[in-house]
Length: 425
Image 1 (cartoon, rainbow, N blue to C red):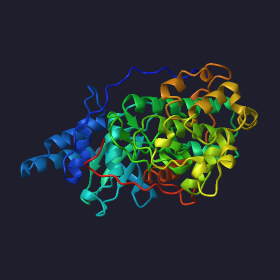
Image 2: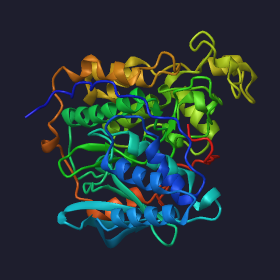
Image 3: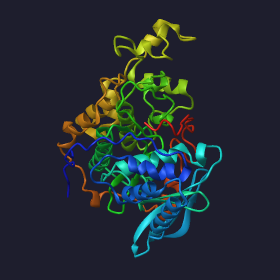
Image 4: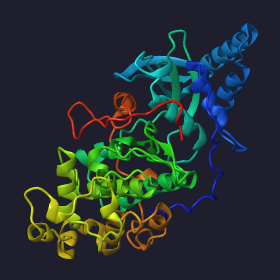
């Protein structure tokens, strides 16, 4: 049985912009109080209550701790599922309903960071409290412990991740399945962008799978608001295999187009069942991108020459204008041979997502309005999608990482970031 792609939801209110307090616990919990939405999640309401009660008085601190204990007492922590340098992940469930499973992500206290809490954790709490969508991992609650750890109570997603699906050759799937997974990803990114939030770390192992087959976008440790178009943002984000060319060229004013390039890479990987734009260095990544999509010039990408790290083809070391000019986009017959599973309309969508010029790249809304979703084969219904077990051990592996971090077996480098608590936009 096939299902049509979900319709676009009404546009939600943009998230608030208030700055969190300075104290470590209060800062993380008070982040949840910054949302201006009329209706907030239970996690936001509970943590906001704790933050509101926290004052510079003994009575206020006692009340805050009482409320924190009340939130914490709602959950029972089980066995450890995963351990990383950034966080440990445990199985858990609601105390009053053992069948209501959760994953408890315990962020480690780290004196290296201001207030002892990694900026990734603050970002994850902030944005997950503001973003409630069927295709985004749910944050149930946040509480702290005597050891200064922050614990995020997250949705229980037992069926592994999208990367694990295409890596497992024992799991066959077809074009209708790819269409369903890709549509759920686009729905999640559309919702983020409508809320003026960039994810900045979209990749297969950040797309977790719920028990009913729903794809859920996770790991908001690199997310950022882009409501202010004039604000400078770092270009050193997004794992290399999924990073768009404008970031390699040092662009620091950007929007949702950076995420859409990553969506295109995920769609390509699902189709090929392998990593698409593979490289070991940033220079190598640009070479691979140009091999597939052609060397950018002012004619093909107006404004590219003004980017900080752009070097004209004729000025690149060891290259001449003639040799670089030979780099043209792969011909259409190559795309048809590599991505036959997508069909003509799917290839058109893929090329629209992987357009070099970010101004010409498909937006999330435009991607969801593409003809690809409405033609046969229709997307597989989520309950009929292929799936792998993965189980609780896989949850631990998926949730223990920081944003930009890769598994021990390695696929790309860990992204270096310079983040601070005073710049949460």
